[in-house]
Length: 169
Image 1 (spheres, helix red, strand yellow):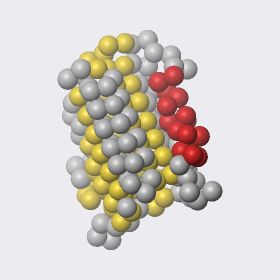
Image 2 (tube, rainbow, N blue to C red; image 1 turned 180 degrees about the vertical axis):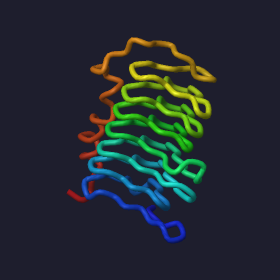
Image 3 (cartoon, rainbow, N blue to C red; image 1 turned 90 degrees about the horizontal axis):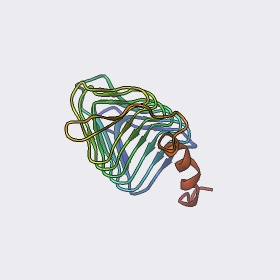
Image 4 (cartoon, one colour; image 1 turned 120 degrees about the vertical axis):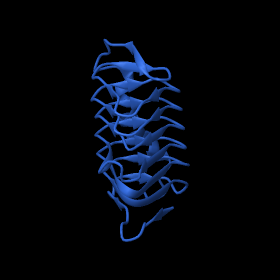
């Protein structure tokens, strides 16, 4: 379901994939080759949500922009795993939010960083580049990740994977 909120409506790149079972509401910008999978909810009813090129939002993810910050951003090749919540935060390029995790207001995942499954990233917390954080609250559990790690390839893999879901090709 794709719908407006007041006078703001989603803008979706032609090459992006938004599953028919996803919900996209309000001031949402979805970039080229981005993927939004079943059950995901992107609701921008106060702020703005921006998904850059090849950003990946997996099944049952909730992303909310309520206006507490100007925009929620998933940078190029960022991925948010199944059942995660991103609320008024920034997910850096090639970064990964693990399944079931929560990333709260004004938190930042720097480029090439990762949050382990079921972690809680607190308000205004920063996860540094090449670091994995886990736990509740999230703490560094590994600080020597490699940019070539499989973790940072997640979004790119979904660009090809969703080709099997498309009905418009």
